[in-house]
Image (cartoon, each protein chain N blue to C red):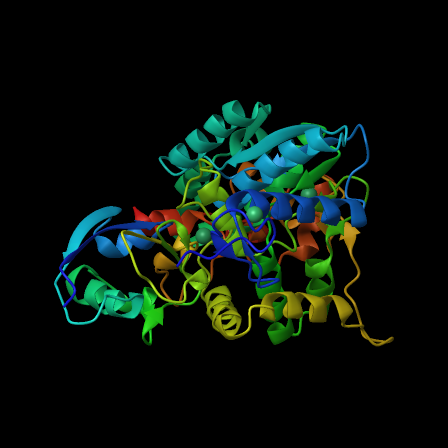
Length: 343
Length: 118
Ligand SMILES: [Zn+2]
Ligand SMILES: [Zn+2]
Ligand SMILES: [Zn+2]
């Protein structure tokens, strides 16, 4: 027997909401989902009228739903935001083709301007070119560091006031768990924050309008709205630790659907005892990105690439930052250690 | 005696990778004395369609937690019993964990993943 919608009592229900247990029809679900995101945005005062907002767009389900909902809400509630899609192209042959195609279709479907910033523009180097110079063994440092900063640098380049990302409740809960397991107090505080303000003026503030939206609802919203998304895309690389955290959470959720929200709330409500040392955050004196050293990791890596000393950013070479900043040459001994491996 | 049941099965969001990359299947379930239910269907899928790594699709006698199942385009979790099942869709929202990364690989970037996949 089909179940009836518990809200309008007219139509056939199509899903059971994990958060509330309500059975809703398509229309009532769309409405409930969008209204919740709207309430999240209003309650946390995520945006101000007139702001230029970059929606981090990967072509995946989360960012596609985010772009769609932001567009709908911006019009419905007159947020007065100038929205644009912001994508990063790492310059890896063949990799982004399908997902960037999806983002390009999203641009037309939602009538939002799209900016694709490439590593080439941001750093002067594509990932393929980097690997050519450093070899496949050492490129990990580069792909991690460059990727973390790419959105920020892209946003600065496009002069957006804010970036919003598609992180959903499941993502946040996973991250809370991982940070608890690792005892990472500083990250634990940051990961539950719905928005991060700019630190050191130049880093673009970020927010997560889908922070309280369950992955299940995001997937079903995209499915029932027939949104065009690319299912192999992901914002995280496969990471075994996160994989375990996710499996654990999903198991919990299957017994008790509120588990995800519970973990987020615990993360938000943990208070750090006075006297617990928090890392001091400075900014990179070259690019302004958050950094505990004089130069951020990306700038050191770039300096290494540009000087033909790719190992500069791999391992610890803090002593050399002064020289790098003042464009001084390195001694022969210092250089010898940092030369690329012989092929 | 329930007559043979013809249904459409669809796998998406990455789940299709466990079925030779084929998204849509039309299958006929043999006749049996009781009406078919999803638990039995899962066993049948596992024995007849699933090509690899069953642990990514089933757990115990259900689907792996997190995989969304739609029956006749409605959330499986709504159904108490299934009378007329004609289309089943399984969506796996996290294809990312299908890519295997060697354990000694500590990268948290993407280049290596892409490189591995190629
Ligand atoms: Zn309704
Ligand atoms: Zn890597
Ligand atoms: Zn820097």
